[in-house]
Length: 134
Image 1 (tube, rainbow, N blue to C red):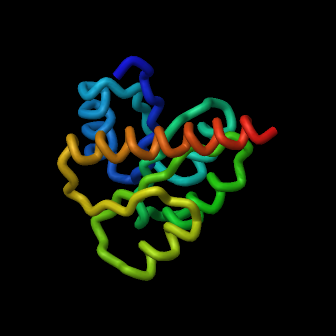
Image 2 (image 1 turned 60 degrees about the vertical axis):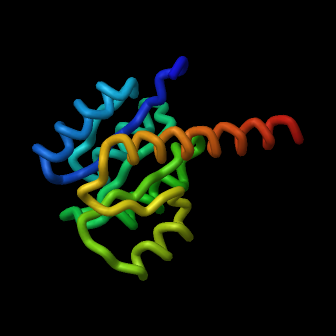
Image 3 (image 1 turned 180 degrees about the horizontal axis):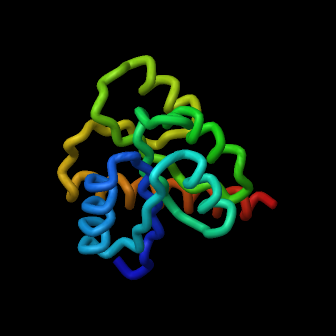
């Protein structure tokens, strides 16, 4: 990977979150974390990220609220839902809120890395297409 894709991992489980950041860094990503939706939105307002990996079940601001908040940002990253709770309603609503993928924990790091790259490329193509049209 020539361009380091910037990834924000949003999950309330500290051990999972930090392990995922380390694993993604080993895959060549520039990954950082936020422990919840409010912190994620604050981080996204101050820093540019290409992809956000968001857990659905978090105290306070849950994943769906976080996705809605991200979608309102001017330079919103592509979003991937990574959750330990299977719920078709959440999957459908998440896609309506702009999520590129809905993955279940545990997800092999290689699979997640592939999905991150795909989401990044789709976001880049979409932005390039918008810019080309004026």
